[in-house]
Image 1 (spheres, rainbow, N blue to C red):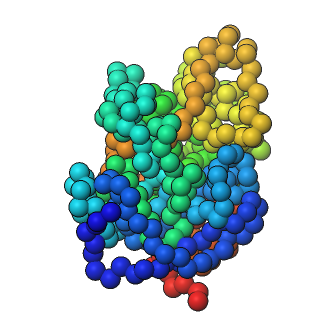
Image 2: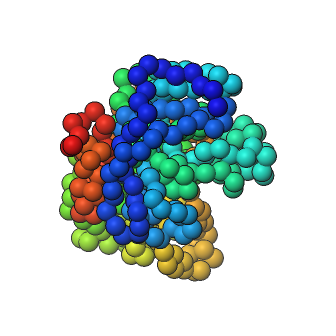
Length: 381
């Protein structure tokens, strides 16, 4: 396909490949990808963030993905547009800085998801013709090549402009973690002043959630069960109550909240919504125990064996449980603008592309925050 290109685009690039499950990444030089659709744009990747899903995928716990090896991971990245199709219907131009979520690369435009559009129940959905939930689309980094490479082809409909003053690294970590926790908070459907608990508040999503929720005017309760994540949560949200679940039981927290609210009826005590980020059953149970009657539990994590749910909580306490995956491109733009306006930023440790395997080792320490590849860092030969 003919394309309009900026200056000095090389013919080869470096990329990190997964060659098999549970193996380290391998760095190779390969040809640049090419545009195949009028919606395609080529970006020079400036930053690529590591997500929990990258670890799950690399461990072989997301069948049938990747469908083949070698595979380039990373579904949250950011870069600068260097080439666009002359037939592009998008206003995106060479030199624009954009954030890239994994979804939705080459959506079909006609399935029930793409055709739906906004509804009173889902006013944040994208307009008909595009959906991040398209059942036939590809996901960069999962079912299609992702951002752990110097150049990437992305879909102009999936990207978001980077606000002035916001760096590529700060943007990349929000393209999955940011939109995921922001969408989960929206799913809680709370009003300013209501109370939300975030289980796993010191992790990559959790420490962003503390910031987003407080800036939304919500009363926030953070819960974690490890020293480093707890320390991070208390650093990024010093005015938020952060609970060590190892030291304080859920019932004790509920009693404290009831006393503060002047409530003595257990059904009226606790939080209005809880977001479940960890994969452990103990975190799920703790979170549900924090809820008032008629409260909402928003599940973001997806443990391989699932969660056990108490039917008594559903029936006798009227607890509702919903899942939350990502958010529309409309919501992605809203989230990034909100982050820029309210100075919501992740705690990030960066590495050069050649040190991706060191980044992965750091991730498995479980210290919280986000880890990212910064392509401006000097790379090893």
